[in-house]
Length: 118
Image (tube, rainbow, N blue to C red):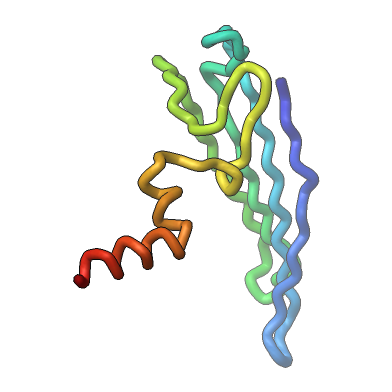
C-alpha cells in the first residue's frame, strides 16, 4: 500500500527581506502484510520525506533534503484496552477496575471517610 501525502508549501519572510519557500512531500510504503489474531497488519515499510527550499535569491541556489526511514516488525502482541474483534472502544469511554469506579462516586467516599473519623 502506498500513502502519498499532499505536498505542503510554506512561505517564510522576515520584515523587509525576501520570501523563502519550503515544500514538504512525504511518501510512505507499507508492505509484508500478515494476519495477527485475525487482523492483517503490515510488518515492514518505509517513509521518504523530501524538503525543498527555494526562492532565496541572495544565496543563489535551491536546496533539497531527502530523509528515509525503514522499519520492520518482528513480533506483535495486542494489549490495547477496548480492542476486540468486533469494535474499538475509545479510551475516554473505558472503565478500568472497580477501585477507580468507586473513587469517581463521590458520596460513597464521603460516607466512608465520615465513618472512619468516629
